[in-house]
Image (cartoon, rainbow over all chains, first blue to last red; front, side, top):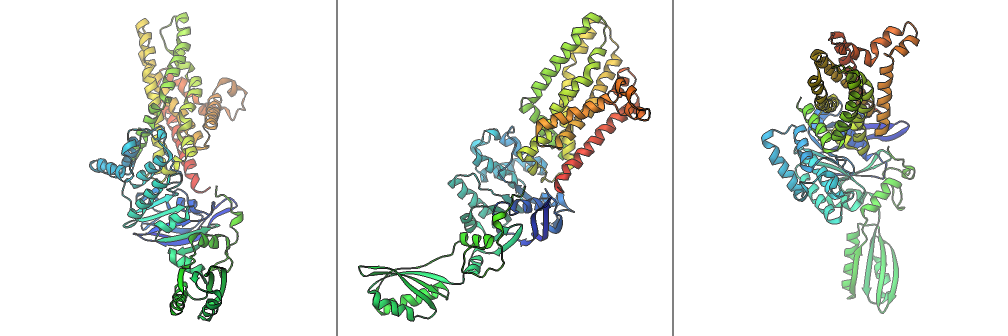
Length: 331
Length: 238
């Protein structure tokens, strides 16, 4: 539904988006993450026809963003960063205005209005002016606005910023729900959010897409060795040599040993869960007591740092990106 | 058309939701009535030439105040980003906003009917010239509005938009004034005297509706609305 090919856009001398290409399809929630000024907002603005790219093409819902801007906009619901709304308008007036301009037939306007008020939990504030609302409610009104015409594609720029934890969870669940049938492309700074909501992750840095894949794919891409944390009840002298004998285990280091409880950190070149199985079998065979066996997980934070700054040492990067430190704001 | 109407309604309502419309109407009527009636009884003439005569100068300050927020505020708050990603064309938004400000101007003109009614009550004015005067007022006001709207597209600061609007209107107004015309070179004289915002208005005030005057104002309005559209579109390429 969204096809982006070598999109490039610069603001004066600053290259904001550089040869960005990706695809996204219906039924997908795509998370767009990257450091400040990486080009997330610019890309979204190009996809919503607010800006025009210097080079490259993008089609949204089958329409070119330059040639058929109006058709693109009809198929997209867009919530810009920090939900800019008219403070002097009432919530209902604002949403009614949107139904008019979205050309929703008169007979369906009330129903659509009710639906989005329901979805976004706006019943309590419907009579108020937007200016009186808290940040969280404004964000919801912004979301309601983007959903009002039931668009097949939803583009949300940091939809959860400024929300309290319970609101954040609500919005995430909402995004997941919507993403079952539609395409949701959203940007965020909050990494757990991406892991929790997205089917696919795009990491953008310095205007370039540096990673594109599912959560697990990205994690396996940066992982070349695994670590196991093992705690065994027994004597260190007896256990250590047995562990070292195991296949694929490159390093066994004893972290602590007291009162017959020994803690190890094991480095393995195999996938962590194979090695864990072997460790378990050894423990059982020797009738020791296994107190803890845990595989150290690579989390998205490490993935993000890896792709955006090249940190996390022990890995061969798919692509060298070491310039995020001097990232410039995009506007 | 539906889109222009939706924008018009939103903007027009916004004038009345915020205090702008009430302040504008009250001050405008207060000041113009005062200026008019203060000499009206001395001259003892049942005519409204005094009222219409000062209008180019009153508009100079009032109209950019009406238009200054139309774009500057949208850009400042960021609402332009939602507005300009809705399935509407840029010119439709420009036109909708212009018509809303024109609507406010028309409402104000209607409220000022108290003046001609008092004049008619007190004497026997020439109704034809009064009708022409109001027509001229709306045409010239439209031109000021289009200029102010254009100024508002250029900046996200309302004060800057206000001052830019006043300056542009002021320049276009004084180039048609005698004092500028006499001191300008011969080859500029016809251009200046044609372009001056006030000259065509004065000729309408005389009670003669000449299509050239009407065309002049419509051209100015069209020209500045076109510039506004270009200016709004320019966000895409910057």
